[in-house]
Length: 254
Image (tube, helix red, strand yellow):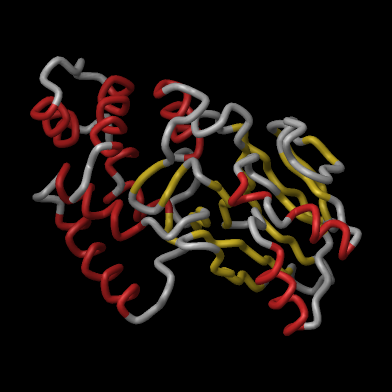
């Protein structure tokens, strides 16, 4: 298996996954066709499928061109806003190139957001980020919190293949929430060095997120106390803490 991160726009990543001992090549969330075509041409590859987590333009902008160029199927949410989609997916399993992949419905960022889990890779779009989570555009806080909890049940070794290079900014916020959390401080320094060297901070692991991502730690007193220091009326329970934490992050300029 080979996983390639293709940078796009200001901070997006498009993922290219080549399967072991098979000709299958999957493209995940191609917001722009040009860098994908360039990478495929450089390596002499042809895609066997395009997977879309949700309908935002920076995730699907290159789908129509790639599907027309390579005549490959397009799999994604049921919304008609996915161009050239050939198969609408729901939560469960899907068979692709002889492989079984798990599909999770993870609404919150959008109502029809999906995540794809294969082997130890989780392609989670804009639901779970390294050090953070997506903004709430179409769902509500309880919905996104439930989606994150669903993903949090996966093994610690799960690689978090999210769609944006937001990690450094997310960890600055995490350090504001939990300034005494040594795992956050260590991760922040490591990611800072990676970015200064021009390296991606992704994928992270779910185990790492449990230790340093405040949005997966809303059940803990350290995060609840920090939230109530900013929003004193927040109830001392996980969903209320998550909702207030997301609002705090929306306005954070650290």
